Amino acid sequence: MLYSITPYLLNQALLKLSQKVKTKDSLRIYQKVIKSSFRDATNYFGFLKYNPAIELSIPRVLSYGLKKTE
Image (cartoon, rainbow, N blue to C red):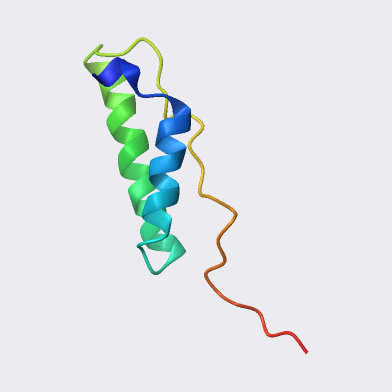
């Protein structure tokens, strides 16, 4: 059910996606799609009272460009 989706579940889903995509820009596109979908479900269609994706952010655990160390 749509109302059972929590911010935690969305963050976990984005974390799993981050392991599959190659660039941070690709992950940012996924984030925008998720956020806009939940925004529409909340504001325009009224399916939800609260938008669980409002604070969805890119995981900082991953490094897309490895830095050289000496």
